[in-house]
Every structure is written in C-alpha cells, then in structure tokens.
Length: 66
Image 1 (cartoon, rainbow, N blue to C red):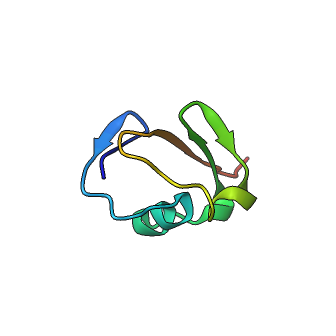
Image 2 (spheres, rainbow, N blue to C red; image 1 turned 135 degrees about the vertical axis):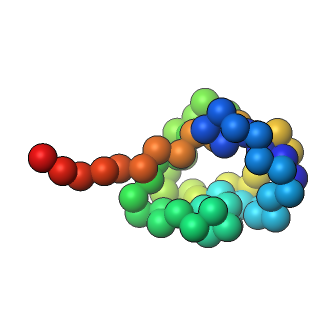
Image 3 (tube, rainbow, N blue to C red; image 1 turned 45 degrees about the vertical axis):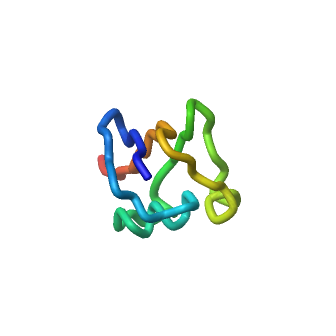
C-alpha cells in the first residue's frame, strides 16, 4: 500500500490499520496525535481504523521541555 505520511509518499506499507502502521514505523502511540485525510483520530480508534491506498496522514510527536 502507498500512503502519504507528513507530506512524503511511503510505498510498500504492510499495515492495514493505524495501530499497525505506528508499530511498523516504530512510533509509540501514546506520544503522538494522528490525522487521517484531514480528520483527527482518537487514540481509542487506532486499532480499528482501516487504512486505504493513498490515504494522507499527519503524525505529530509531542515533545516536552522547558
């Protein structure tokens, strides 16, 4: 599957759900906010949200500091 992630085309994605995609990318779900096709996704929906070819995702990582 091909996805557009943070503006970059990523090919050969094996994940079929958002949860699987985060695991495939090595991203800890608790520290990110995700938008799929311009819609913010609740963390409780990550495991059930199916991805489709050419979906556009924005993944934002929270960074703490002072």
